[in-house]
Structures are given as C-alpha cells and as structure tokens.
Image 1 (cartoon, helix red, strand yellow):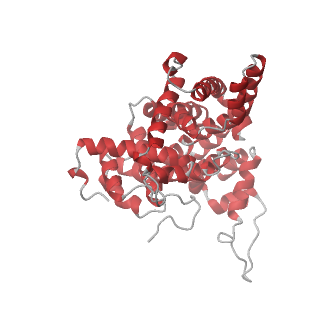
Image 2: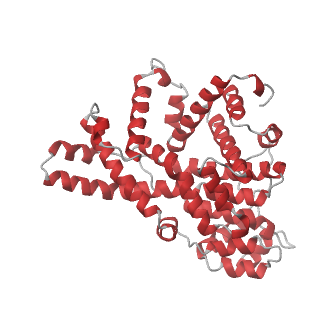
Image 3: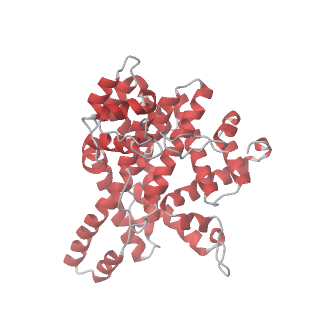
Length: 394
C-alpha cells in the first residue's frame, strides 16, 4: 500500500485528504451517502461528485459552518426560507447541545449509561501492583460492566470444558475476570465503555451505531499497533483510541435527543406568530445528515478531551494527548491517534468500496503516515474485539 507514496504531488495530497474526510464523514451517517460520493451511481444517473446535488450539499455545509460560528441571518439573504429555518433551528440546537455537553458527569450518567467513577477502575488496571481482587471491587460497582464481561466469558467459543467435555457455565465475576486476565482487561474495559456509549436511536440513519463502533474499535486497535513503533504504550494507545470516539457518541446522542424537543419549541413559536409556512417546514423537518456532520467536525475532539479529563488516569495523561490533537498541536501520542483514526477511515472506506487503493496511498502520504506500520495494519483485523481468539487474518 506504500510502494509509491513519495511520487504524488502536493495538489493530489490535498485533494485526496479532502475526498477521504468528506466520504468518511458521510459513511458514518449512511453507506448510501458515501457510495454516492464515490460515484457509484445507478445506470442513467449523473455522477454525484459532478452533480448539482453535490454542489448543493457543499453550499449547505458552508451554511452550517456559518451557523456554528453564530453568524447573523444576513449571511443567508440568498437562501430559501427552508434553509433559513434550518439554519436558525440548528443554531439554537447546537447551542443547547454545547450547553448540555459542558456537564459531562451528567452526560455520562444520563446519556451514556455509566458513571465517571470508571476512572478508578482504569487507574487500578494501570497500576503495576494491581490485584484481581482490587479490579473485582471496582467492576462490581458497575453492574452493566459485570453483565457484559459475564456474557463474553460465556460465549461458546470461550467456554472451558470439564473432564467429560461439557461446557462450564461461568457464574461469578471473579471467575470471569480470572479467565480474561488483568492484561486483557486493559483493552476489554475501554472496548466495553465504547460499546455502552453508542447511540441506540438514530432514525432516519440507522447505520450510525454500527459504523461508529467499527470506527472506534479500528482506531483503538490501529493505535495500539502504531504506538510501540514510536516507543509508546500499546495499552494506553488502545484506551485513547477507544474513548476518543465517545466524543462523537455524545454529540450524536444529544443531537437526536434534543432534536424533537427543540422542534416542538420552534413550532410553538411559529404558531404564536401565525407563521403557517414556517410551521409546515418545521413539521416536516427531519434530522440533517449535513448538520450532524458539521457538529462532529467542530466539537468531537474537544468533547473527547473533556471526557478524558473525567475518565483517564492522571498518570496516562490521555486528556492532554487528546487536547493536543484538538488544538492541532499533537503530542507524540496525539499523533499516533491521528494516524490511527485516519487509517481506520481509509480501511472502512476501502471495505465498503467507497475509495480506491491509489487514493488510500495518497491520503496516507498526506498525513505523514509511518510506512513501517502499514504492512502490520494491513494484515490485522483491526475491527476485531480485544477478546477474539486471534487478531490476525490471512
């Protein structure tokens, strides 16, 4: 994948980077959107990249960025009434989301389904002197996590057998933890935290959960393989890669949770002002893929850095690493995360045939991807769970 990386021009690098980012952002929302951008048009259809639809989407995205920056409606003087209403609505919605996201302890308990007390468990797991008993004490404080771990050790492929060849049902969390082992738990726990954080209801975009989970796990595995090449901890990189994706989970959950509430408030205001036209637009309004993309682009890394300040053990400094990337001044571990998630993006796009290998090569060159990591990653099932029997594939 890297034999001719050095032969591409700067212009090609820029165009490839833009194309990859745009396609991946749409793949997270829906495979159909990403495939359309990749030019997989049906017979008789115009290629999406050259169509008026693509131009309209780019124009809309620029409007959304204006909304994020809280510009006035004067910038939308040439937009349709529908676009103005959409802008005004999302400007208000984004403000509400940002306000909610500042209280991450509440977000964790009310939206993600876990407590920031998980930090104590992560701290124990990263102590050289930690014992199984100490880990057990922390895990049983989180019933959902105990339940998930019990499910894993009782999967058919992991069950141990007695002398007669019968599968043994694990019934205690201590036995489950001994089966998994402390080293494996350093990855299993972040994996479970990410899984717990995924949005459940995202209509009309039901694929978000699956794609977001695959992205988070692929980033974590990729980071854990790149980090040792830079003399950094594989386990710390895995934790950072998994939890960083929760920034997107938070924003997506808040978007869908607050969408109907905000729309109800706007419809009530429109009714009071006797704006039937605006009321009809709001009534028919659906969650916007483009606004959802813009929301993640603008805030996901910052939210992830804030979250890690609550969850990450102080000795790991993962919050600082995430913040360095959000501020475009990546630390050594921040750069590993950047490489890992860009590799995860092109791997997912390649898997779904939304990109070609030539474009992958150019994109990896554009981000200074370490060539010695490529062969390792290409021969690894990066989306595999950390408790899989093997992480290698032929």
